[in-house]
Image (spheres, one colour):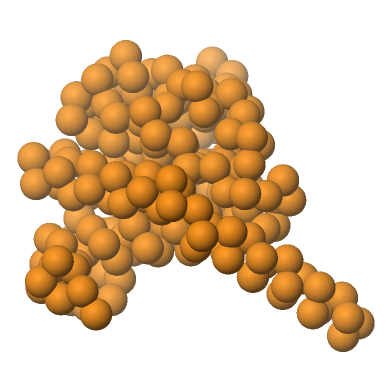
Length: 199
């Protein structure tokens, strides 16, 4: 079992090392964080959605924004669209599972908000529908996906593609990137700011 554990750890570290050394990807993460900061400064909110493990990531990300991440500060408006079982089952029953997120965006999204769609394959139909609904509403769209980006890559304003095709490695990297984005938002809005305190 020990070699297996070491292999899993090494694979996870390798993906994160590739991210660390990819200046284009890091630049995109910075741009996404900056867009989120601008959205909050302008009174907007962030809507997030995913399926399975990505649903857990969406809920986790929203929770960090609403509650706190590194320090106490005012809550930031965020909503994980995969958490309301009554809404999900109503939409799924009445319209189909592919519409469970897009219908919520039509109801709760507005121009100036951000939608973040999380899909390891980049091909989840309900995420694709949600991106289309967000764009038609005038929202900025951000995707988190795996190495290919799948179909969401061409649809999103920004698509952060983790350099892996293995679902567990992609999900681990997504959570790290979500934490980084949350930390940047929090620091720039309520802390000393990274430009003032680069260390």
